Length: 145
Image (cartoon, rainbow, N blue to C red; front, top):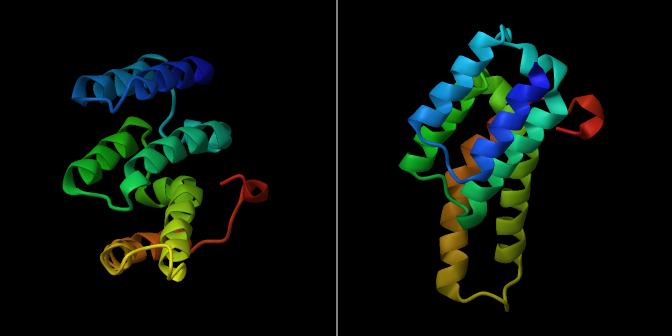
């Protein structure tokens, strides 16, 4: 049953950002198959982590989470019936990659213009609280997420 939910989620998320009907369908599918609220997170953590990380990588490609993307993440969290802490645990590697990319760019003084460096510093500052929340807990599952 979990494999069916994951396959559906991969299909819908792979087609671009899902809309409200996609999220509703995913939740309804889980309810119809009697998937418990914490079951995907506890029984398929690496698969859920990969899906969540892909979404965060896409959202963080520009180094910023805007209001629309933030609302999308709330919907994504609801679709997989995750707590905020669970979402942050699963998204941690993607958030770390985004912060590392920004920090590396800022450190390469000759590579970026002053405006680009200032923009990167602003983006890094905006991600700081999300980064702190995501990295507050120790890694689990052998560092897979």
